[in-house]
Length: 640
Image (cartoon, rainbow, N blue to C red):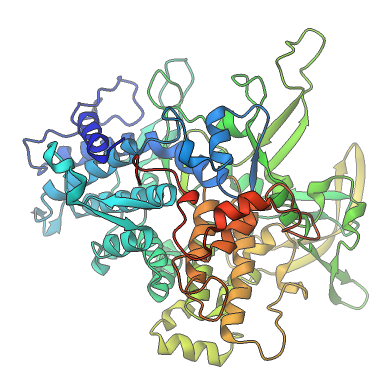
């Protein structure tokens, strides 16, 4: 479709008042008002209703950002029961995408953006009450929603028309009036709209929402309104990272994580073995930190049933449900299995007689019968495929005899950010800011004074020269290195009383930081194989690229199925195009970086992540190696 028609459809979509039932989760005084284009937004009720209306619009794109972020990446594969629209996306046949493909509708993105633009153009940000700016919190919140939506759209379509003013007429929708920009150009433009003073403002707080009886008689989840808003430091960090302003990105992410009393240490949620004989899995606090039991930094709330509005379809995509007769549509790829199994799980071996600690590893991974219990344990913690015990001779033949469970799915809370995502992007920014030791410390140790003291002075001097010494400042009472202890522990496992020598992490608040890799690979801090390992004579750029490989692997291990993967691969491909002297340098992207991984998604082995690569898919995604490749992206219009 032509862009003019696209944006005209946006106008039609957003000028209609959004009616809601009395049980609507996002109700404010039992109704939601979108925008009346005759009025300035200068009353508190106007701004509250408008922000809630934008959240309603975000519900339309929530599932899509997750699905399109994963199905184009290297960590998932489609099953034989995937819908045809998913199949088109997985096969990268974007030039021939059906007009009816449910995942390709840029109108919904521009609807959010136009709502945001109208608010930003009309909200009275000069209005003061009791010497406080009444509406600036909402202004910053809407600015953040617009930036997030644009970034998602650009990752899906590659280039977008940058519309920064509200479209209220057909003439405004003429594409000749708007710049057609890359994601880097877009990020630069959007970042310019933010000011550092915005970081002094907290997000709005409208109290509790939801928790009401739904049309089906169930009770919807309740939501604290502050959890629906993107912290400004995080979105500014994302914009700076995409704009390749790495020092700014590192500072913004660091400041969010370490800010005063709202600091966000990593915590020590993990999954580990019980004892040191690789037979029994111990306590799993990792899975409990995700999905329905998790607390993301912010999320898009969805309705509990269709009676009240838009319901997430992610459970039917990623898990077995009654609605899909247990036929899930996306599951782990061979590349994700390969990535997980080739990690080294490092275990504290403690000699109680000598008091000596040493690392121990699962040496013979191939001897393990259960593939997901090799290497990193996070995948087996969050994903289970097991026999369907409810299938019998009376069951319909259409019902799958196995079920898939994915603990990351919460259909009423589509996660935008959680702590580990921010830590991994901090590591990415630090690394590209030429601080690879510091970046790697995020993965191996966790950032705290004890770890920072061990960073080389050369690297600290480099940070000082770049004006980002602040990235080494962490509250010593809130960020301390996790400590281990040992004792004999007895548990009932498979009906047997089993006593083992167990390593465990102190869980009190003073010992609350460790490396992200320790979530599933044991004690990464003690792992002598998990290091920056380069030949003599290697350059700083070699170190950066080596650590970047570790970061992209950790992103796969930690955030699989969450919708970030294609964007992560795309962003690192963009970074690498700036590395003079390496293949792929000098263009917009190092296409090989992304193409090699996606083309190996179905064939990777534990020994070789790029074994059996699909040559046709690789060629399609490689293109000329350095230029913007249209084959990565869906089509925004007929011609672009």
